[in-house]
Amino acid sequence: MLESAIERLEASGKSIHALVEAMSEETLHWKPKPEVWSVHEVVCHLLDEERDDFRARFFALIEDPSREWAPIDPEGWPKSRNYAGRDFEETLAAWWSERQDSLRQLRELAATESEPRYENDHPMPWGKIRAGDFLSSWVAHDLLHLRQILRLRFESIPTEFGDYSTLYAGEW
Image (cartoon, rainbow, N blue to C red; front, side):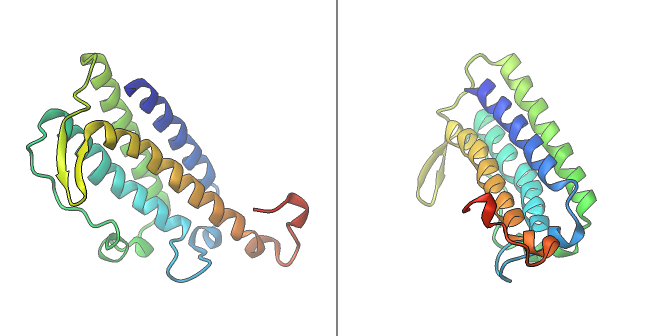
């Protein structure tokens, strides 16, 4: 399971990086509606989640499930952490660095423990979450945001191509 998660997180990380690294400023900040995150904001979220949520909580569960977790606020972070005011290149580089650190730590875990304690759990408002749940959710989180980035890129095509149609490509 851990090796699969490492492979998937590495692959999805590369995919996310490749999708966003060469985007124009206009496309990075484009939103279909004011309440929807831009690609820039998605990358800010990915950075915060990588550092403050998934990696921290997964390893806390593996090492000591009784350890208290630092509070997180993914819904409030765009304002409280000024996502719109962050430099995109710095944020992307920071996320990439954090992802590489996560992969390094996961590889170290795989090398030192043949069977990490996936059943270690922590209480959540809806019930208990296990370390294995966190690992699979981390992999899924990347895919959800890849889908989000792809959708934003698709929907933003008119900002770069004007009123030329995409109908020939097919339906989204």
